[in-house]
Every structure is written in C-alpha cells, then in structure tokens.
Amino acid sequence: MTLKKISLNYDRFIMTLQKNFDIFNFRPEKNDARYAWIDYAKGIAILLVVYRHIAYGLVAAGVSLPNGVLATNDMLYSFRMPLFFLLSGIFFSRSVAKRGVRNFTFQKINTLLYPYLLWAVIQISLQIVFSRFANSERSVRDFLNIFLQPRTLDQLWYLFALFNVTMLYTIVSGITGRKKIWQLLVGLVLLGIAPYVRSFSTFYDIALHYIFFAIGDTAAGYFFLEETQQKFANPVNLVLLTPLFGLLQWYYLYHQDMNLYVYMLVALNGCLFVILLSSWLAKIKRLEFLNVIGHYSLYIYLLHVSIFALLRAVLLQLGVDNGVVLLGILIPSSLFLSIIVYRICMRLGLSFLFAGKFGEHHTPKKAAASV
Image 1 (tube, helix red, strand yellow):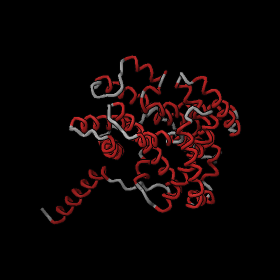
Image 2: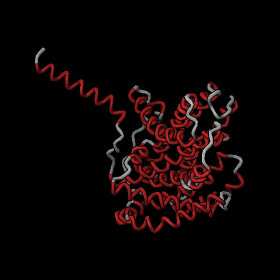
Image 3: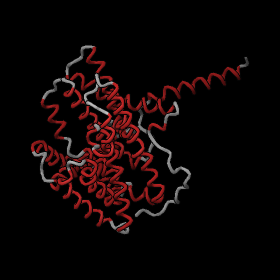
Image 4: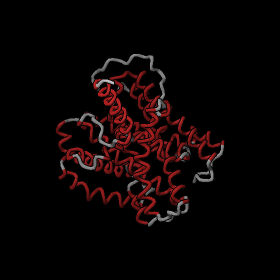
C-alpha cells in the first residue's frame, strides 16, 4: 500500500472517529450572536422544567426531598412556560413573512403537532407496558386525553398548547389585518375567560398563554434593536431588577391562586429577569451549557421524562435513595442524555421521531418585510 493510500485511509478514519464522537460534543452551536441570548433563555427555562418534573417524579416515587427544594421549585414556576410562549411570539411575524401562511402552518404541524401526537402515543404506551416502574397509572382511555385533557399527560401538553395558540394567533392575525393591538386585546379577554374553562385543559392552556405569545410578537421589533440588546446585557439593569424579581416570586409562592391579571404581571417580570440574565451571560460567554441545552430544548422536552424514569428506577434498585443526591444525578443526566439520544437518532436516520414532513413539496415564499 502506498503512502498516499495510507494517508487517505488515515484521514478517513480520523473523520469517521470525529463524526462518531461528535455526539458527545457540548460546545455551543455557531448561531447568530444576536440571538444567543434566546438559547440561553430557553436553556434556563428547560432546566427549570426538568428540575420540576424530576423533583415531583421523585416525590411520587416515595423519595423524600427537603421542603426548600420543593418550595424553590414552586416559587420559580410562575414564568417558565410563559417565557417559552413569549419567545415563540418574538419570531412569529418574521417567520410568517419568510414562509407565507401556508408553509408556516405546515412547519408548525411538522414541529409541534406531529411530535406531540407521536410522543404522546409513545409515552402512554410505555407507561402502560412498564406500569411497574412508572409513577402514572395509564390505561387505553388516556389516549383520548391527547386531545381532551393534555395536562394529564405529564409534560407533553405544552407542545399542543403552543400549536393551538400559534394557529389561533395566525387566524386572528388574518382577520384583524395583522394589527397587533387587537391581538393584545384578544389575549387579555382570553385571560379573563381562562378560569371558566379551567376544567378543560386544551382550552385553558390557550386562554392562559395567548397573551404572552401576543406580547412577544408585539415587542419583537423592540427586542432586536441594538440599543435594546445593549440595555438587556447591562448587568446594572439585572441587579436593579433582582430585588423586585425575588419579591414577586416569593409572593407567588404563597399566592398561586392569584387573579390571572396579577399573575400575568408576575410572570412577565420573571420573563424579563431571565431575558436580562440570558443577555448578560451571552455577552460574557459564561455558563455556555445553558446555550447548548437551550438549542436542544424541544428534544429535551420530548425525551427527558422517559430517560429520567429509567435512570430513577435503576438508581433506586441500586439503593440510591437520598433525594438530593438523586436530584443532583438525574437533572444533568436527563439533560445531556436527551441531547445524545436525539443525536444518535438523527445519525440512524430516525428524524421522523422529531418532525413530520407534511407539505414539503410546497415551495417556500420569498422573504418579505417583517410586520
């Protein structure tokens, strides 16, 4: 074998090795620096989501946790889901302008509705088959709750809620001629209706979260101004907001049945705090793992419950029953194993597990000016 062939084979071997081990690479993605704070914000939100699910999963499994752990979890519950809706709203107008309404609708079907339906079926099926290890008692009847009561299906309700809010927002946008003041008014009216539809979680989640999506869309132009970005990244503003953030989160801890309009203000304060914190961290490039998990937040959302349920069962069988220790192991493990499992699935050509392909034959509309 010639030196040239040896060199060529060696290069191929190194490239294959790098490609295979790249699934364990947790460096931040090379995205537009202007949007890095968004992945940081999603990272903080998904970290809080995983924290809550694992903590209450442990309690349901009979594991004791200190009151402070659960109280902190409850205190930070007010803003994490509104933050996801607000961040989604930020990109609504420019996404519709880029794709056109038809392709935008297909894209949401593929990335929200399709994975929701698929993973709801998968998760319910696994919980029925492995009922011995699951905290939730499932039956065939639960398949109806995919449409009727998504809140009963652990974490998956968010995907259905975001799809429904996005589609309703798109319809209202067409009716009102894209006048965002009407969207804000619709959001405020729906928030007033929310208590009356609370027993129907499909409608309740739309009514509760529509206003945050509308605020995100309305404020989108302001968010991406260079002057605004500089203000967000200024640590002085973060320090000034911190006492109010702490006070309102403490208030929320003891008044979780507050009027929903008051709740909206508490949640928006929490969203602003996370945005300022994320902008500052993105500027100084610290805690970059938040950037990474934020980039993969959707896939973590889909996978983490099944992963930590399996890990929890294994650890409990091994005799690890200290709640704080379990929490410390399960949170980072669930986050990063979710990313690794997603990457392995993509390498194996299993992308259909995470996104549909409906409407792909349509040609995307040429980008238009943002509205």
